[in-house]
Length: 365
Ligand SMILES: [Zn+2]
Image (cartoon, rainbow, N blue to C red):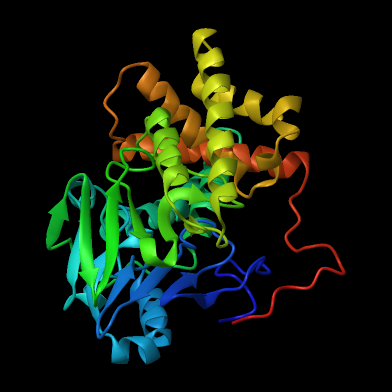
């Protein structure tokens, strides 16, 4: 693992394979920003279960190589995708000999955004950047959006990916026998996406929470409703676990789940209030972000606060009674709003690209 994150920042937590004890490993990608997703490996007697693949083939291959010592003894028999986002399933083809399992809702949603769409999206960033410099286009908005899109996709390579969907789906819950130990899959979506699920390993008192838990970076809610996300967190808090592996961010415990629950409770009431006042979504996101209330909250220091533009937009869509799915055009519009907020925040107080002098990065793994 390099001494920098995929985005070239200093890591705030160790990356690579982490032994969590009890035959459970986590694959960590600091700092949990766009596409810096975590995965996991649960070892049984003579076979294993992989939790998620990564956003491209190179990253997934690197992860599988580092797991080789364990998987030579216990080959991967099951691959479980916690949800439909590409950063959790676009490496599936490299584990195609395993039985690939996800919720039915996730399997259906996996076709909505393909690697080819994402590559087009990356090219769109370059076009926006060029057009944004032209005198006939608005005051730098497109340019900001283009810059943001290009940066968020720069570490990833979406070419050559063959989407490989689950070969088995379920609804509700499913218990698997992985070499003599139970692993429970618990569907908790729709929340972050249409079909989120937890991978619960009872004998290790561990849960892989997928993107229901982000830690240290602001969560993104594409599907909603926000009440569904809060209910999913309540479900997690009822589990008999000590260790929570988030979809993005460092390994945590139930306090990590409580922190993100606080974010959603706060945002839900603040967004609703502004919706009732007739304030547009982007203006509401900006007002919340700039409020002294927000600044006083623990989550005010999380990375990517501009994602609030996605979150308020989704809360508004549900309040307007619109269909929960988000189309490609609306996704682009929301990204323009996200980029605009990011630009405004950078203008207000330039974010520290690196920790202040004296803070040493974590040892690379
Ligand atoms: Zn993710």
